[in-house]
Image 1 (cartoon, rainbow, N blue to C red):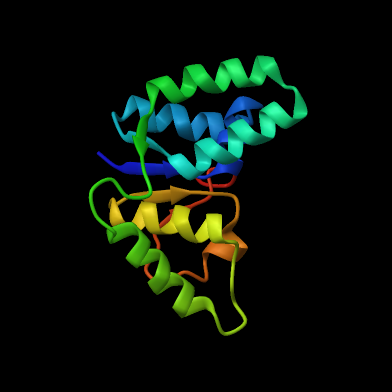
Image 2 (cartoon, rainbow, N blue to C red):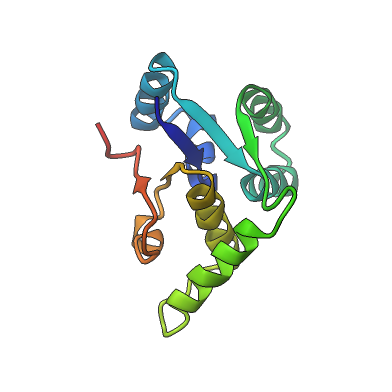
Length: 138
């Protein structure tokens, strides 16, 4: 059983029913893999859908989110924040990525998840991050 942490772009692909992403999501669900959505992804997705007035997609996301497992930046300690600082320091010499991407990578790493993302160009810079792109992954 695998643990998958979904990035915002993958959640958007799921809401739009991207065929390759849906095939990989369904395979993961059939395999009883764990599907996690970080709180930062919740923020990005809901913010975007509300700003665009996409009430139907927001309803679809709420249903999907209610069936997924949730991961938070930090619950009882600063482990994830410390990992985010470590990632920032590793990337600060000209390879920085957005803070939300650093937080999402840190959440995935601290919780032993493979990050599912289409943002391979940026997130491949994070040392030690396990990731996969379901748009092209079999």
